[in-house]
Length: 140
Image (cartoon, rainbow, N blue to C red):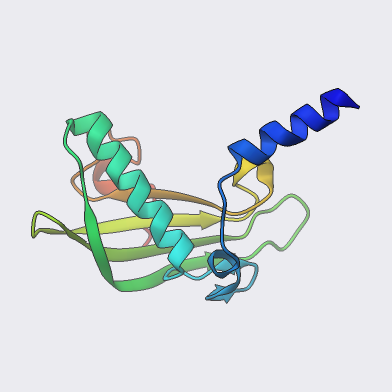
């Protein structure tokens, strides 16, 4: 019993707090839309982290525009995940703009409970994790 309470307490500390708006506003199907606040917040956090780790300089995104969905694949069978590919133009604090490509995938969050977001900022993928010029997340 004590072990279960401890595990529950640890889980509560690890899982980030989220407002209801992050998961209910702008939802299309079972996934949030490309312009949903929670999705863009995840893209911004990942860009800042990767900029600091890869380039030793912070990347501060001040806003997004031209947000659009480029492809959507529904979950039409057992074990298949719903996926939504998106792109946007990010405005950086430096005054530059960069294209951002991202994937929203069902059951890809913490312990498969929520959605997950994978993103790539064009020209800022030093190790080509997402292929040349974000090709793994860039769907025409």
